[in-house]
Image (cartoon, rainbow, N blue to C red):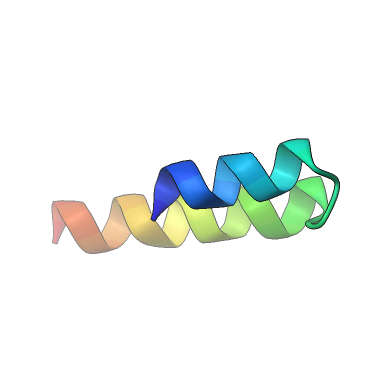
Length: 32
């Protein structure tokens, strides 16, 4: 999931803010 987000970010499909938010949500979910 996280790699997919980073890959799309590199392609410019996602804004940095959206990618950061998704990464933060993923980290919170994984650490829960």
